[in-house]
Length: 158
Image (tube, rainbow, N blue to C red):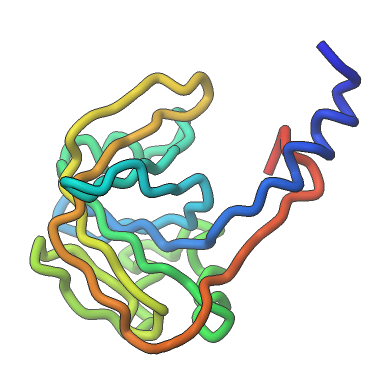
């Protein structure tokens, strides 16, 4: 293997979008910041999202069988803060944000650039992440703009 620090720097130059993935657990909305996301099919439209195998949200996503992606732009990326830490008991990060329901009943952020409503159609073992494939059932662009792009300093860790 090449120099790990050189590899980390090279991987860190791969741009990622920023998204809020929403699913449900025990009839409560559950969300996380996702950046390992990409479109993987056109007909039918499909996306893949990688979720850390140690996260409780992965099991909720599997049980729910669906997820939404709120695609963030510069104006909506400030909403990510609440998704990086556990909310107080009985609350969710969505409580302080404007949301609406996608056709599946899962939440999307109304201030986001766009949203996708997906049905889980498969999963692949990606090592420390599970790659979940979703068939896009619905979606919309909510306002004009460009998506937020993120670069990591170290492509071998968050």
